[in-house]
Length: 112
Length: 112
Image 1 (cartoon, rainbow over the protein chains, first blue to last red):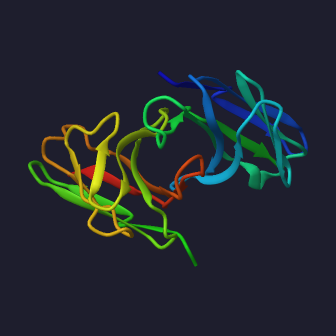
Image 2 (image 1 turned 90 degrees about the horizontal axis):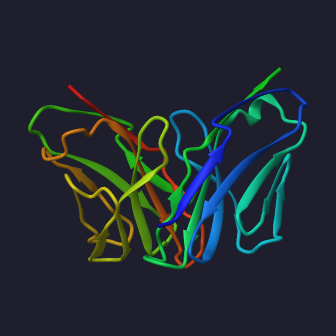
């Protein structure tokens, strides 16, 4: 059974204070790892897909990296508008190829 | 603009009543999904459909039903058999394979 654990559950940063969010996973063969951003009362917004260990993707202040056991979402010089819940999900090779397993998310608050 | 439209945004159910949540997409995606999100938990898969007139149960299908008569539409019915229906319901679609799922903005269901 695929499993995803995100840490920390909540993170408070000062504006400009860089940090990282962790997503640890166990999966019997990784088809893809996905990062999403979710604002209160909204659906998740797709950020990145990572397919293999060593891969990195960047978008503005966000950078996602992947190893064989975990993924990190690095946030550089965050701004208050980066405040949101960040979700990680994996798609494994076993079972249905279409199913994603989600973590519980990291709630990020960036203070001005 | 291409996207996923969920309606209504808020829905209230009375005891013994079935309610239907609407999901429409104009992304020309083959696959569509329904998830349930509860506070502090990851998204849990209710049902998914890979093609028209075909759908499969997810991890928590009991008390729910779906149909897929058109590629663009994947309505979810919450039946009276679902004893704890209060949650945030999210619909998603994808192009298939390891392509990311894209989400609507959800329907919040509450009990009267």
